[in-house]
View 1 (cartoon, rainbow, N blue to C red):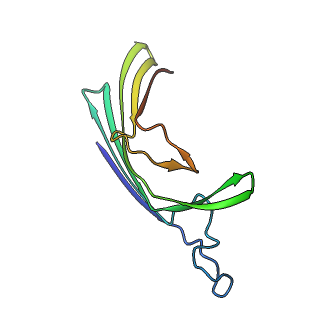
View 2: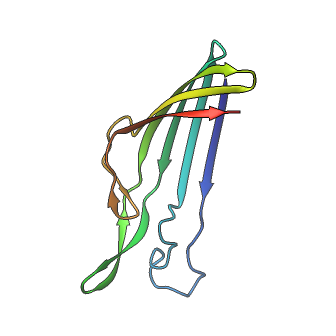
Length: 130
């Protein structure tokens, strides 16, 4: 099993005296706080399941309108994703990995760079490893 945690603090505020409002010139699409927790577990040598938890603070983005560009403050997000895979040996040194992934398990509606995310969604595939 594997557990990985990370935290990022982004200080993108302007220098003192350069702006009247502290958030006026923050970096675009960069939340001040971001945290992730990844938990991965292998089972019976061929199965693997990974849970990925993400949390971000609010952030600013710019959207263009017919009247010009405008800054918007988007709320942060809290979401969980899960990935599962099964590795099938095909021959010596060659295997196929069947995988599936579900993003945003809770189906939370949130914005990413000013656009609605699709809510809960899934994908699957096959990867050949040699």
